[in-house]
Image (cartoon, rainbow, N blue to C red):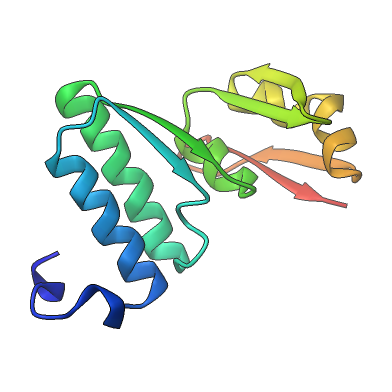
Length: 129
């Protein structure tokens, strides 16, 4: 965040502000991070970097992150566990690939989901349609 040190917070872009707030939470040593759509203003590279930073904090000091997101592919690629909410209730809960393949996911988003895995990493992904 050093490249942003000389700028006022209200002069930063939405994505830069999100990154600063996450860095602040890391500096405070929070054991539990609750993030609501943390990648909403971020480009794909910064979205991956944000989730990589969360994983690093988990590995470094055991921090837990609860992330609310509509980005199923990013969540599936980076999370240990997905909990899908539908109709205000837990519709599916488990390993990312299991949740993506669940009929509850198609029902919650009102579209069929085609699930595959990324070459190399084997991470699951879903394409609506």
